[in-house]
Length: 409
Image (cartoon, rainbow, N blue to C red; front, side, top):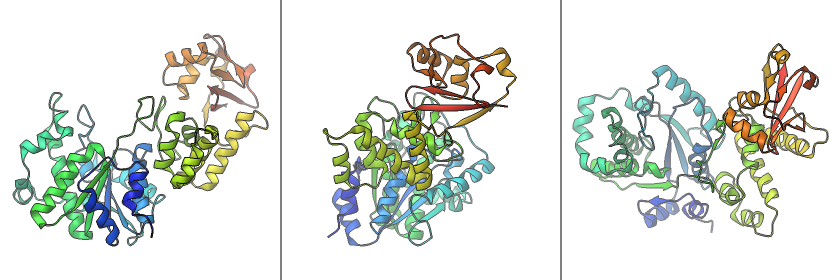
């Protein structure tokens, strides 16, 4: 007998809170269940922080259930206040629509969205044409302001200021769940733990309006062992779009994770079995091998096996320093004219994104972690000139593995 997918998710660390564990496990054991996760189109790409939702839905589909990715081009008109200290910048309808289309294309890499095995739907389809008075009478009357203000997302914002437009967000997300229940018999919502209050609101609304029982589940909000938010680096977010973060850079992010995070990352972001993961991360095993597997598997899922192999080959050759393959290394183009006066290494490191600031670049040089064409830079005032060119290129490195090439035209 195959393992219940709820137990698979729990074993892999995807379960933080659940409305009724027994009910969810039994629900997933009875037959095909339709479940959903929402994705806000606040940018033109998803990022590593969205992988938890994508992988959770992928596991459900692999177990024979039907996942729905709800693209929030309707709720995106307002913006989710969860986890924010101030109101999000409101995007235009045109920008939100463009972002939504790009995100929909990305979702299809993780699970099938053919309309039968899985779906990607837009909540703008039912939210943008709502009649406000009807919404207040039919839906708003079921919400208690006292209970809404007790939700963490709202309570945390009371001191800094919570706008009325944001206050409506929970009602609209609950309405999403109601519409999905009516249209697709969706009975399970999943989300990050900051969505717990919104999920409970949807469960309660369906109980009141449809006299039906549905369930909710959250996964933990991810931070690294060092306390930083997962998927963030000095140069910004790790996007899933190859045009924003190359497959090579994506691979590098995973191969450089903290040793203490490798096991959980393998469980969250790959489809390797837990026995395989346990073997790779055993105290007597080589953690470097586990990191290579993590980097390859995550890159393969997001960018395809061919790109994963290219990133793997480039990393190996650069690390060994023999027959270096720079094809996949992030590359910038700068004017050759700038070399006449020289470009300070401090400026170049921050300009191409290898460090987040010039002060960080200075520290990197002081600590002996900056290189030009494989030669260590020891002087904070060091400048790149035409004498550093190798076939019109200069290769700089931060630390052991983070490379960047600059072509001077």
